[in-house]
Image (cartoon, rainbow, N blue to C red; front, side, top):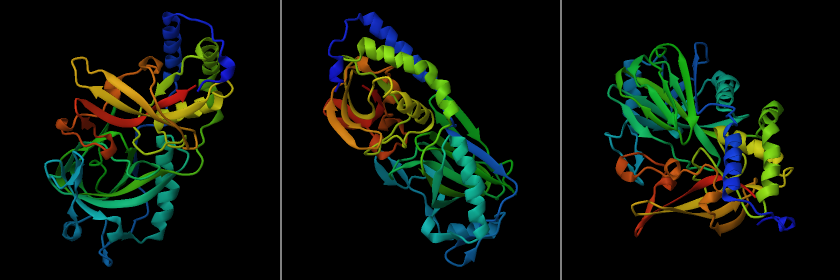
Length: 388
């Protein structure tokens, strides 16, 4: 897969290669996200969405007891995807839900307010240029309601996250706790719950928990977020990160390019069947856009790789990754079943990438659940940028 013009690559020592890999990894690690893993906005002025349930039952805001009971009467208990099964388990999630097909938002001013302010603020906070939001559910939390730690499934092509709009309804408790690697955020809606509207969002594989509601009702609209339009990151963002990266890639290509094929791991997990440049989230998006700008100039091909991991059950738990599929930046499949050396990965850490065991009680996206095969565990995910 290397360029044939590089056949005369010079020899090098293991230490030289290790040092160059570390330097390249540090430079790529220094690229920061243009957005956050989640957003939180409070709106004191907004258009009433005009919530109507069951075809003809308007819901007044702030929510009162009668309307809360009316909503509850046509809702069902919200199921969970747990251990690869869809179940209703009140020890995991205790929430009432109403599908988007069973309620309407009839105030036309809400649509304008939503798209011009809420969705715009959400996109900016997540570091995206443009987002599309599709209505998903109406959720009602009552005293005692909660949702254990989980991450959302990527069930649809191009879905990147979740938007939650908390409608005016006085309550206590019900904080949302977000976690991604070392980043942790607590989002509290209780303080402004009686009269204000709160909008929260997060990427689809950010782990989150809704803590137990202690009083009142928490009424939320949920939306599925999709990348929309062309991705745009400012030229100043590119130039800031690429000044040192381009000469480093050129040197790496000169010294090792005919033999070594570095792979840079993504931070987020991606479980969809194909990937293209517009799919990555947060810092992954910034890294991808920077590499896309300079790889060809530095003599590299740049693509996404999806790996299957085989973790053998032994004392050392050896990982045996297979690079099953390569995609170009448009999402077209290029190749399959290459076996990279672990040394090709920059800053490779199997512990950070392995999905949690089903026995730990976590809620996983279906495609992330490890599959048992004899004496090994197998899982597939988008592993990283492949720079060849």
